[in-house]
Length: 379
Image 1 (tube, rainbow, N blue to C red):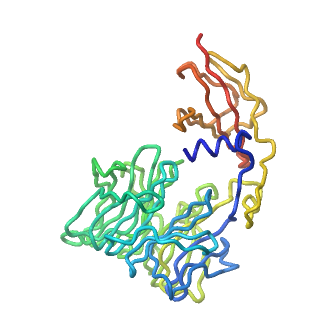
Image 2: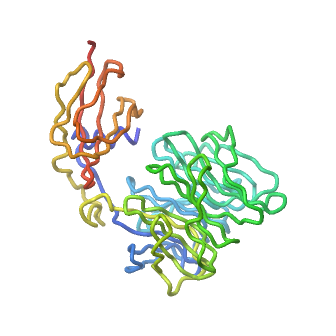
Image 3: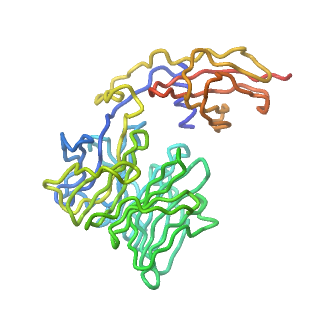
């Protein structure tokens, strides 16, 4: 339903879209707590002080302006506003060493791994209705990532049996577990997905590498192996072609291109054992002010697409839409029916759709959000 609300906002049926964040890195500094900085490491700010939290994993809900984290010392999951205010306890029972965390904002759920109880679990975003998805006997679990479109979750694990590091995936309910990658003696930590290119990235502390593969585990490629650190948490800014990671051994937060080239130190001072990492990227927008730092309602101008004919029975055309725009079509229950990229032709077939009313969401190559409605009628 979050998708549908977003689309309705763009359509003007709800009103204005509230934006309350800007491009930023969120990360854990053991000495200070949870920090935020600009992408170049400037404007550092402590959001949650270390004397009140021992965070391990971080996740962001940009739409609702929320920061989520796991606390491995207090064995709980908490959230706050993006500025660190209004801290809430969400899950406070049954945890033994919660680590990686990921959010499903479409279905109002959060997923996490717990190394102490050897479980992968999920709950509603408010911490209620906790479910056990995967149970182990002897394994360390570290990070988790979600592919909601394909109903999949991915995670890293290590220390099972003869200290074998693995990348695995399963359905979101924990069924149909598959091992994608195995490395003896590997300590696999961070994990991140590039869904546009269908790539999976993960870090290995033992061999000081960052590796990627296809989502099915094929075409494994080490993209970074030329440093002596211990790469830990990992986050991707896909639209800018960058990846960011924390390194506890080097006491750095670094970045590189997605192919591993052009390694840059982002933060190198006063950084003790950096851990969890997440980011807000405005790279799709025309400038870095795509999201504001206040909570005033910001109307979206020129947000409606002209669609014709409307109603239509087999084909619709979008007026004045740039090539290579990304398009999604939803039904009124919020289920995505179609996703593709428009090329030179601004029209496409709707012949396969059942009759009814649909919502269309589009992002131009410059990052401008557009939307519209159309009705499919019988031929």
